[in-house]
Length: 427
Image (spheres, rainbow, N blue to C red):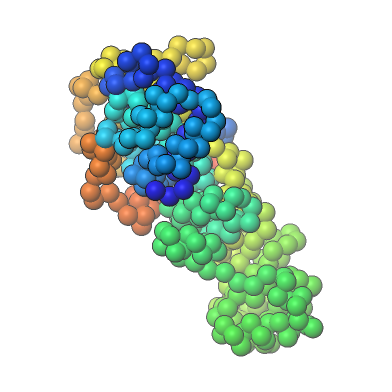
């Protein structure tokens, strides 16, 4: 077991488990569901990301001697619950939306079925992954749409936790980013990596020309030179003089980026470097990217905004008990209601492929499925074992691309509005 996985649970989860073991209810068959009551302010859809990470973490979720000792040291748990955890292994079922799927308010993104004892301890583990990864992928998908086919590079590792940086790079790639600067994400998840030098490399040398020459000598003329350490116009002139008109790209990280892109393109063309690309970075988000759409930009580097969900760092998902021994149960608190019963969903489409409705219904309830409709949830875990043949990261990336094409055009707007696909609930 990787250190820390089993202890990704909260005290209150183990307190409930302790009491349920004491009164005999811990072994009742239950279903917990993950859903979002609403989308972040201004959003019209969400992107499901992190499903493979949840399944991998679930497979490692066990309590060894070190974890039991740590829990015992708190003095907050009985030997009864500690003995139970020492033999913990999830043997239930998980059904959910596949990686790269879209979700809307109330979508049953994940259903975890098993005994109460098996499922209740997974809440923090599941939500910590899905709330982060879905938030990042949802923001990144908006940026991908705003970029209009231009290349996006994730470069936000320095603006978040070291493990969150790896997960964010993966989620951004799922959502359409072309590459990441995070080498751990490349090694762990196969995300393409890329990068260029920073201002420190230029400042290290006695002149900008010396720095550019050293980089070109080491990496070749296809490299990207950062031209805004001193004066951008002079930097571009020096870059082309050093590398020649076949220079791969120039990167600009400051100033009025729209104006700088225009000037850089005109200057490069005037110097004969017509194939040299213009890369922009520096506090970009989906709105800034959309604002640069008319400018001669070839690629964008996005950092802080993507790894923080562009203002929505969590997807707002919850993990709620919806069924006990086949009986629907639901929370009734004002503004925090849940809908009882284990659920599934059908997404309805026009013959053209445009999605028009998300029908969420209790499992077992007959629901008409038209020629162009599809059932969204799939089996993910059966009797504790992951289902074979789940999509790869690249397959999920393509699945998301097709899903975004299916959204009504107004659902892709960055302005505030209703969810792109309305949700209908059938009890």
